[in-house]
Length: 268
Image 1 (cartoon, rainbow, N blue to C red):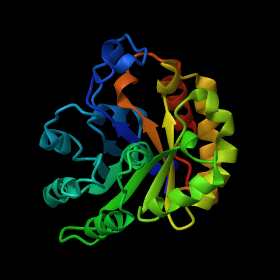
Image 2 (cartoon, helix red, strand yellow; image 1 turned 120 degrees about the vertical axis):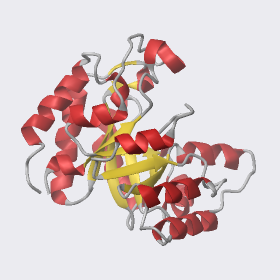
Image 3 (tube, rainbow, N blue to C red; image 1 turned 120 degrees about the horizontal axis):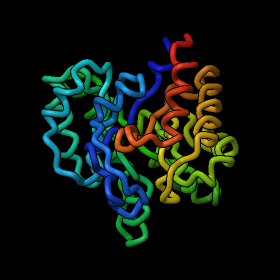
Image 4 (cartoon, one colour; image 1 turned 180 degrees about the horizontal axis):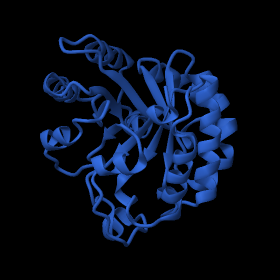
């Protein structure tokens, strides 16, 4: 397997963050679609995450025809399990749909717990069983987990671990670039929290957490670190975020492209 075959894209509807949408500091206008983003970045897998934008799912699935794997976001499916049924139904026609991902799972769960509302880990196991053992094909169940959400309180980590266990895999993301130096330490904690889960890393090519462009230096450092972990077998993939700034001549994207040109065809 080549390194590029272990990379995914975190895809959003084209133009989602144009003109400073959601106050993330991007005032430019991008037109790059998720499929174009994959082609540009040189990878053949994508998660599709509408982030609240109504989309024609069938049109996106048709555009992804040549990709080897597609995963759809199912935000809030722990509270509304019926959301996964759409993914299973679509997988009948589109054989490359192989994953469902719970975005911002900890954040949403924390809000519910703070309100005194239960988060049912038993329901999560039921959702996993349905995704993994449905009538079409095995669909992996992934979740997003941010480095600022763990490693602060060992007791809180231990209490939350039961909600991690039902997922086939966990994607570790670092929201603010200023926290990138903490990644090695956080990854050691992450491994302890996910002994039975598959693991991937998220890599932001725009610094959403600090509302500005990511630096090429931070992106290259992350990719070099993640490459080591892919080679060692401690993780199975990296997720690039995102197509929505890829055509804006931002430094971090250029660095990611250079890195992929150098390492993408290495065999693991």
